Length: 378
Ligand SMILES: NC(=O)c1ccc[n+]([C@@H]2O[C@H](COP(=O)([O-])OP(=O)(O)OC[C@H]3O[C@@H](n4cnc5c(N)ncnc54)[C@H](O)[C@@H]3O)[C@@H](O)[C@H]2O)c1
Image (cartoon, rainbow, N blue to C red; front, side, top):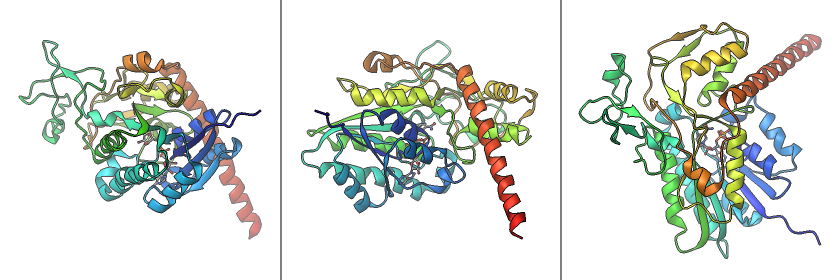
């Protein structure tokens, strides 16, 4: 007799990470997506939506801010596994739209909690797409190698070209990899809402049969990340700018450092969280474990896309909410989840640049077809 597949609900499942997670789970699970197809994410980027149709995913178009719609979706699907990915995701944009970010990310999570608590019995797993942004400047050591908390970098220092993280007394610190032992210190409204999501989910299901797992993701990149959304995905934005013949603007002194992790590796981690026998005790950090400066990565992308590697300007500009250094300590993801990144940064950048070339080529031919049709119509 055929076994029933487990029901999975993925909020934000039409997005960059979510649509790939849907594809991965589609053979083994009955997958339903709850997503409002946010225009900023989906306009001009049909690929992720198309992926859902290709894999026979059920789609419920709805907004996390709509309590009744979400409740109805949870009731209908009656999931044993929920991935909560729906969110407003722009760090910089969150300063301009604090109410919207709070409504979607915090209130939306509250709606999800209420909906799950109404299931009887409330059991299963909820896995949150958390963010490393909750660490702010992250873990640092002082000149003697002692762990020391960094304060938020000041506009005054940065205007003088001094971008290094500092301690309370103004001493320069050296950043190191972060794990869940690191003190949280969100430096943007986006990061604060992501931290709130973690707190709420961990608090809401105490004493119930619901298990909560949290993955703090570093900078996820790869094919499928919007080439049009100016608020997220620095590497995709670079790919578009390079192919449009633009000179890349590199902020600060070029030494901003990130841990770029390929979307396929992230999707594997989510899938494993759904099936691992014992839910990891700790919040897990998901990154490549490779630190890369923005200057270096820009150079690699320029090279891969056939442009001179110096077609960039180091502007010295800086933005609130940008942190200096991000690197995941993935030891616990390895030991508690059995997960490890499989793809090197170089290999991942090759995939990204190739995909961006194909996508922009398609875009151009669609535009010229449209143009030809327009001419034909007149
Ligand atoms: N991509 C990264 O680098 C990264 C890093 C850390 C954490 N995360 C987290 O991972 C999750 C997924 O990120 P992503 O990169 O796939 O982003 P994405 O923008 O591609 O996907 C988010 C999805 O959520 C949907 N959504 C947005 N607002 C909604 C609302 N009000 N109601 C219903 N759906 C809504 C969007 O339509 C989109 O399909 C987010 O929670 C994000 O905070 C991502």
